[in-house]
Amino acid sequence: MRADYALYKAKYAGQWHWRARFLWDEQTGSYKTSRNLGVVAEGKRERRRDAEDAAERILKELQNYPSSTFFILYLESFWGDGSKYIEEQEYVNKTPLSKTYIENNRRNIRLHISPCPQFNGLFLSDLSRKVIREYKLWAAKRGMSGRLINQCLQTMRVAVKYAVTNEEIPADPFSGIGKAYHKEKDKGILTVSESGLLITSEITDYYARLTVLLGLMCGMRRGEIRGLRWGDIGDGIITVRHNYVDGDGDKNPKRKGGLIQENTRIVPLPRVIAEILNTVVKIASFTNGDDYIIQSLRRKGVPVSAKYFDHAIKRELSDIGIPIGEQKRRNITLHSLRHSFVTLSRLSGISDMEIQALAGHSARMMERYSHAGQVIDMIATKEKIENSFFSIHPLDKTEKK
Image (cartoon, rainbow, N blue to C red; front, top):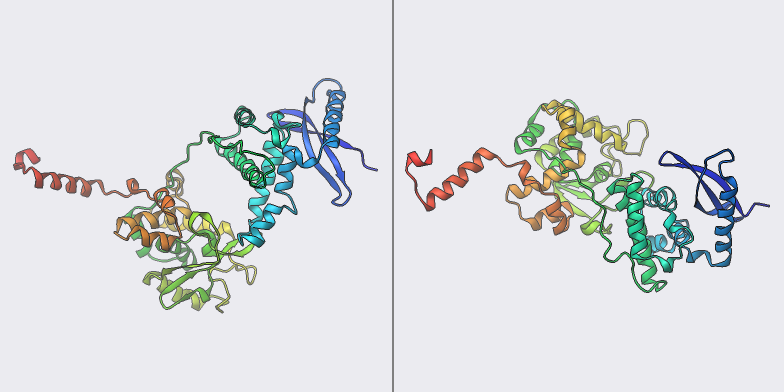
């Protein structure tokens, strides 16, 4: 028969700490939860007796109260197998969560939330703004980045909001809780001249060029390019209806507000991309309507790996005179092409309403994806500003100089 708990050690911030697994489940063949015991494993006996005493206290609490009332157990259940929330997203809302997203939340709980001493023995109903702020401080002192802290807050926030809507707790303690400081590095984009070079330069790899131009000229995401099939193209139109995700396969593309909907979107097929496709269709091994256009050379019926896209953009940009070091310094990635699409489209005079439809963006995301400061031609703009002022208040040639 399994013991009521199992001690083990884990390393945090350079020190070994005692933890314990509790509540053996015969059906799953595993313990239901694990807890940080708040005991550093140090000294001759590594304070094992102290760890056992702490484990006994926590075990008593767990046995005396329903497991769902403990905050950590609630989080583990919320993001675990058989979660009502996950099932609702898939079957009711038709917005299934990706396996990667679910696993990331589980990892956050296991590595970055459960070890926090403020959550030991804490009931869901006792979660407060004070406790959450204490968690943020604990996480920051532990060396967690602002980005990771915010991800963990979101892991908890979604679960707690669900408990509020189910009337399990009366109010949302996350209300009024701000994010941890995190300086987001501005996404680099291509200038007008660099985009022109990318479009007109000699092609050495048709698949790589096709990849980057679908992002630059059509605003497509990585998963949408991976999921693109021959049957999605016709009559000068690309229908974006697939979003290929590792572990999940084909999903529906993201739409406004990040929602995944049944609706698809369409984008014009630029002439330069059509010409590349005319070459690709001649060299491709499989060109039926359901075949992926950029297909893996090793596995039939599977698109190229996600890593291929990093290789493609690095090669294409290096060929037009943007070395890898500069790409890194400017933070230019494949997703930068989508940012470039939005920015250059707005600069060219296409209306925001049209761009939102083409990119599948909300109005809020339009601003986030626009980087006019990176593509302004300062000399030409200087002339425009001067000319506009001269038309209002003419100056003689001496003054203008």
